[in-house]
Amino acid sequence: MLLIHCPYCDDTLPELEFAYAGEAHIARPADPSKLTDEEWRDFLFIRSNPRGLHAERWRHINGCGRFFNALRDTVSDKFLQTYKAGEARPNVEKAVQVSK
Image (cartoon, rainbow, N blue to C red; front, top):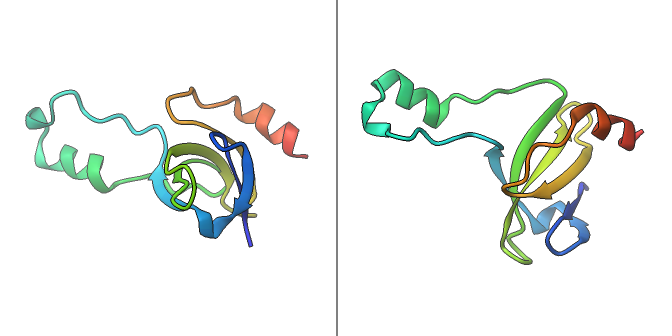
């Protein structure tokens, strides 16, 4: 079972308390009506799927209900760091060093 730390509740809980909400740090286009169909498709559906470290959005559905971001290694499923929504993505190298 995965354990995930909610940065708002400041508690580490089982994965069942949370819901995956997609890739983090995806900026919505300023004027979607000016996008081509292909650009709009890419915004809605095309996401990176890296092997290794990935920034993701999660929601604490059975707790505070808030969205937060996490750095997770997709190979090991290990969460390296979680941080509040709206905060800048942490330094990846620093997160890897802290997790070792």
